[in-house]
Length: 249
Ligand code: PGA
Image (tube, rainbow, N blue to C red; front, top):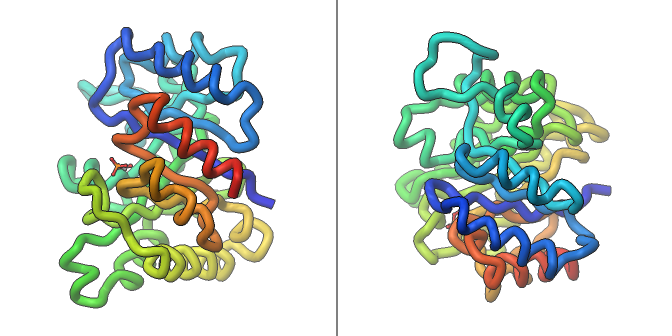
């Protein structure tokens, strides 16, 4: 049985003053029936982790370097994120793949580093609109999955997020049929590679314009174990109804 996961991604948003949103989420969900994770900018991880210490809400990061330490100006190692209080890290988000030329081999190395440091890796996959329109979605997603997910993946330390690039930040959401097709494909491919136990235990999140008004229909789709939420995770007013929809699913 996979435990549901509502994960937020604040991207490059938020200041210390915005951490009051965490208090509001914790107050609204005193005993959540799903795992809750907010992946914050690096500057907010340590104060946020201290703030949620007595609650089930967990704090994550949005990227890490694949090396454990060294001469990599501006980068952050997985062990440093752990040290700051993170328990998870998003890896291979399409904005990192596009803006920082991260390929799947790099994402895999980062996922290995995250696992070695004790962090859950939330590995992101997604096709562009051109790839979907050309009928290449499953081919692209399958190749990204194979190359981005390490052989050491387990249900405890690995989460996969399917995020169609064309649905991120656009208000345009994939249909439930499109989500069902990709999630079913991912589940089958994970089971083929890792076996029924491990392949069946890795959680699959959908991401891309998940909002309070569309969350319930997404969570009703087979093999959707939760969501990776961008814009609607920035405020408790938007994120809490999404959590409630997940808990009710
Ligand atoms: P969005 O972002 O919910 O704002 O579309 C999702 C994501 O990029 O993880």
